[in-house]
Length: 433
Image 1 (tube, rainbow, N blue to C red):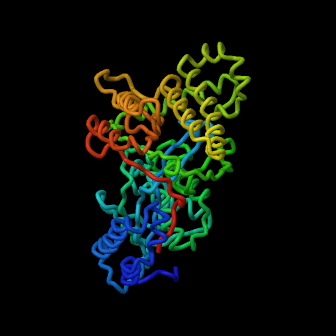
Image 2: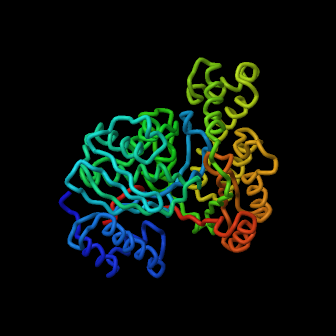
């Protein structure tokens, strides 16, 4: 990579505010609000220099990858369905440079160092569930796409909280791919291919059978509707809308629920949906026409069971809602969009049933959060379960005039800082400097 900049030059560009236009676009802030973002880059450069003993004359680059929020289509992607997703202003930030060896060294603040050999991108079973597995998988996916990375040093800081439903793992995958491709491939890998590489790393190396929703949201940027009927060539469509201009804050509320021990609950959802599809000799629900499915409800109930039937009904309805959400946003009908958000949340609660595990009646954080948010919002805004469900987060659209009281009420129940206001970021994984 011939266009790396000396660290001192990057620092100067931050201090003289020549990067402010790029930062304002990424983080959706006005010039007067960019101070913390400038300081964050300066601290990252300092930390990189400390960890890797770099001098001010040493060259590097700075990269970013966002978290994402699911706006529509809850648990529809793994069935070849339709989703609506958006990149957000919370991101992982990385300073990186080639090191002239085969060693890939990625230091993540708060998690420590991950080191692998760029020459060894085979699956290591003992690494399943680790950052090292993701890095190997991403490098292997890039190599298959024509970008063979060498060794590099990287320092990462992130404000995408784990377990938040904002896809911290997908964010890390896209960041790793963006860094390696930027340093060794000239940034030639397009955003959709990068998303597939991230999913490949998570499925094959990390060992989590995720769909492609998270990676698409982090990689492409902005609001995007995605149809996954053709897994190899998902159809993406950008949607232009500003929630703030509609007078609402998009909020993610962390209920503090624990995700540990929930793998069986998460995997049961695609498992049961697939069981419903198998009644028709198909592997996933997108291969079964809805009219044919509705005509055979007794058979599906008998062969797959009640919950599988209800989860399949949710799938078809939420896919339709995604289409209607896109139409509402593009037509400027925000009231209709909010109605669809509420309907999706209602369907997730009743049919998808991913708001509680029912293991402990005294511990129902997502259900409590939904009830409390609806009480605080009254007949305004909208609220729904967010992401995988069972624990973690809910999503709310809050009128700005109610934001302070909403935040106070939810923080009383779930702790200070439980409510995060997020903004849609128009750019996915990218090089800032």
